[in-house]
Image (cartoon, rainbow, N blue to C red; front, side, top):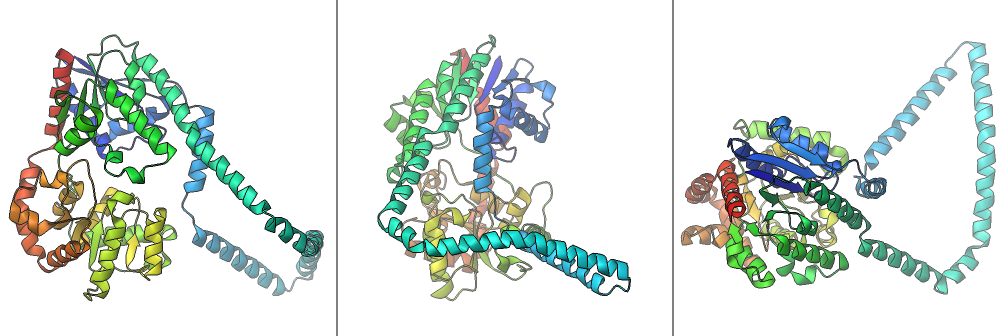
Length: 520
């Protein structure tokens, strides 16, 4: 049997540290261990290096798989990606300030050395240099003064023009242009055309028994020759339709629907997603959907580090990235700081706003000297950032976005309690095993994917809360803080049971489904 893996990711989207990348490499490892199974990876030329990177990271020889890609990357896409990168790049005002400071200090040192010289020739040369600098600056200064004068004279005329609606017209025109470009989705159209080229190239491979497609965002796979097994984590639009009302969301849902229709078998992570998102909302026959749950994520890595090691990792990271973080954190020590921790992207349904309001009550009404650390960039969520600012929580709610795995492990190790207030997940939250693997207990939302797994009623009552019930959330967090060891003891059987599902066994189940579909 020969398995084809179709990867439609955009430039720089294939990250070896993401869960889906690890799953893909586990599937490849399991397949190549079987003498009668071969693997081919098909993708765009712009992810060739990413494919090499995930294989190298997993210790899979590149020669063990066949890799076919298109050539190069469209120049237009490079331009769009470059513009996006410039707009999203982290601001580094402190670096600019330091550069200016260094320039002023160096200039002052040079002038001081010149003034202190006893050499008449060096002193005369310095006077000449200063004269020419003053002369060179005189012309632009004079021009600037003329412009300022003209601006002052024309001020009333400009104000009158703006009051007549000119400013509003320009604003509306600019907003219309931005929205039109966004709704047209130029980068998506470029990627779609590229994926059709990938499909055409993939169809030249005549010996593929079954294709594995790890995402539902590539409806172009409907043109693949051969059977398709597709990963279907969730379709969150169905849970929160009011949060996804713009044109880009409607376009994404259309792509998902096209992908679902193209799959011979879908694999999701929970019964809830299978029944509600696929069977009920997309009329997919239950027999076309397999539920394969995740393995656990162990944050210990290759060695079980202690608290001092975790502190060292965290402090080193903050010092290294201080220009991207709040000035307050420069030199801040976490040795004796108790904090709640939530690792998540700042999407609305992740309920970070609700957690922030609950945290404020714990801090100010229950007088707990504690902080809240988030891995989501709260500046990307206006409601949360405004809430933090308006409530004076800037030094208590700390955002550490995009931390590497070793820092993530350190944060879990040092936290008093892991809190997961999300309103929805497609599978049992990774946050539980990430926290417990380094000795930290969790409390989390009582959502369908959690109640599917946690069957012990006493444990369910102790570790879960209704995400919309903030009183319940406050009670469970306070109980977890006051009964940390008891909560760890209660969660031990759950962690032990979940630990039996290794990623190797998960990958084996995926391969079993592929073999079944290929032979059917």
